[in-house]
Amino acid sequence: MSATLAATGTLFRFATAGSVDDGKSTLVGRLLHDSKAILTDQLEHVARTSAERGFGHGAFDFALLTDGLRAEREQGITIDVAYRYFSTGARSFILADCPGHVQYTRNMVTGATTADAVVVLVDGRKGVLEQTRRHLAVLALLRVPHVIVAVNKIDLLAFAEHAFTTVAAQVRAVTDELGIENVHVLPVSALEGDNVVERSPRTPWYDGPALLELLEGLPSQDELDSAFDSFRLPVQLVLRPQGGLSPALAADPEAAERHRDYRAVAGRISSGSVRVGDRVTIFPSGVETTVAGLDIGGTETDEAHVPQSVALRFADDVDAARGAVVAAAGSLAPARREVEAELFQLDARPLTSGTRVLVKHGTATVQAIVEVASSYDLNAFVHVAASALAVNDIGRARIRLAAELPVEPYARHRASGSFLVIHPSDGATLAAGTVLG
Image 1: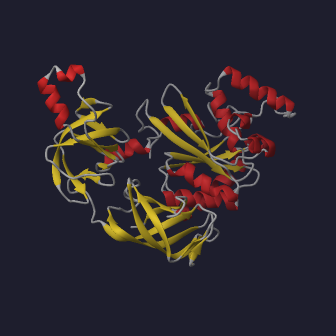
Image 2 (image 1 turned 90 degrees about the horizontal axis):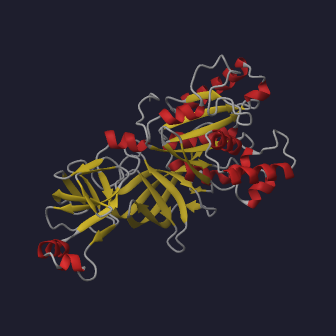
């Protein structure tokens, strides 16, 4: 996808990933620092803490800008996903600094699931490691729209072009094997700032964009969904008038009548766009109707797009409670009672064949039984027969649902093709799932 397709001023979500000590938190801290997204008092605190710890590189540890937990600071590692918000002249960003340790892969999956892009760091001295392959495999399965591989610590390699091209070739071999297209590979020094916010004069052999320049130009998933995907809105609640009339409404009989008759379904648009006058289908009833009105934040509008939250009023009196889905007429695939899925095991308790669970899809939750079929060998990138998934495992399973759901292949529709597997007793999230074609 060309980096010139993005609209200016849009929100862009990205995450970092990579092996331990590849410099993810340092890169994020450098990005925030050089884009002037850090308050003065926070800079002073980080500088003071860096000096107390005896940090030598310019007496400023950029990782402290994101590693907020005490255990993270004490061990010099990232444990939890750290979210940061910042803006540039081109767009606003939400970034997720994800941990690199194998035991925290589930946190990395969480951060990458909603990302428009993931920046995978590779230590230029070490090249592609097992955890790098694991993270790239996860990104391939999640079908993250944009994958950026930053070959870090290029300063420790004397900014040598051959060192970068060697690692870049390793990256291309893995991404080609996984079927990841349009991968962006660039040399960076998170510690010294080369090619992070601005292009570095110390890498004249690299003619591509700096990391921030690339992130500012890539189209977000919402932009892609709005342009190419059909309208979907999982219903969260039905809106009806509550309480008595205000003095202003009571004084206007026509407005009071409209208030008493008001009925709308509300939710967050998961893909596409909707306009007044559009024909839509309601799942599970299958009833087709026309959108008579749209309200955003109590204000009428003619059009709404992903990811806005909106209230829809229909021309007909239709039944659409929480868990229903409003979709562009004729666009829904047949609902399913059985689903073949890819599962990302997140809970420490193994997920075994025959386990009774809850499946949450959009705003609907139904009972289900999981039949595990295989687990993914991340070294050979092949599936091997298995009857259980342990924490951080990726595998395939058949999900037998107690009620039909309008699931679609994840490759075609990310929102309708994803779901959560939940423990029925304690409500813990056991696994995240994506629907296979």
